[in-house]
Every structure is written in C-alpha cells, then in structure tokens.
Length: 192
Image (cartoon, rainbow, N blue to C red; front, side):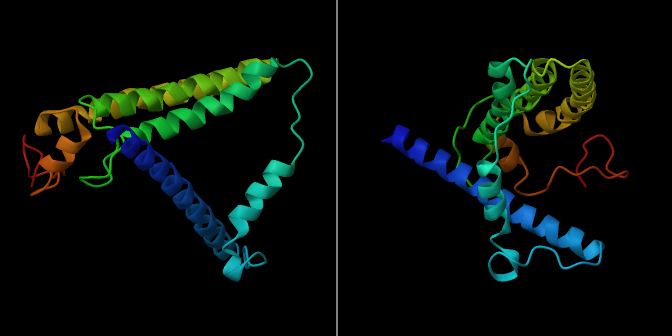
C-alpha cells in the first residue's frame, strides 16, 4: 500500500507543479503586458486564464522539425533529460510533514545532483544539432551553470551544519523555532 501511496503523491506533486507553472506563466504575461502598457492575454477564457492551455495546444499542433544533419535520438532526448531532472529534483522536497514523495537521508545531495544533471541536456542539445555555433552555445551555457553550482553548494554547508542532516525534512524541522537567517550582528551561529 505504501508504494501505491508514493505513486499517488508523486502524480499529485507533478500535477501541482504543472498547475503552478501554468499559473505563473499567466501572471508573467499579465505583468509584462502591464509593464508594456498593453492588455495582455484576454481572448481565451475569462481574463485570459485559459491562455496557457491554448499555448500548449498550439505547441503540440506545431510541426516537429529536426535539422537534416542532426543526431535525431540525442536531439529529442536532450529536452526530455532536463524535464526529467527538474521533476526528479522535486521528489525529495517535503511539501508538508505528510506529503513528500521520497524522504531520502541525502535529500539535499540528491536535489543538488538532479539540478546538476540538467547541464548534460544543454550540452547534448548543442552537440546533437551538428552546428558549431550551437555547440559553442551549449558549452557556454554549461560553463555558466557549473560556475554558479559550486557557490550554491558551498552556501548550503552552513545549513547542513546547523541542522545536522542532509534530509530536507530535518532541515525544515530544525527551523521550526527560528529560521536560518544570517544577520551581521549574529556572529558565528548565523541565527538572530
């Protein structure tokens, strides 16, 4: 029964992430329209709320064109890798004390590893298109991502030391009384 419950929670988490993404796309388009002094999405549904769904339908109806000299398998695989790694990274995030897909002991390391694996899709996308410009762009994107991952991982060392665990549930529970915030007057402990 616990395996079925994990699958149900996993599907619910994916559906929730996709719903939040859809909502954030709508909010972004409305804000950008306001910044540019125009109306924004207002044709599909009330206040344009169904615009992201119309965009998905339009995207699925488009012709799938692959460059003639590209490696077809890798060209299609590259976007799938980044989607899979992003969704897998959310598998260890505890949404509530009872709603979590996986409660791994090394959840923080798994999250970092999944976010790092997205680099492969960028390099594969550039390489598989058989264009030197795409390859250079993919390598540049990979270098940028790798350059910020090291400081990000080092910034989490203090959180791990203060909570005493790599489990994301333990990190959240360690902040039940006081959040891990850094204040200039806090000194070494990092809590104010």
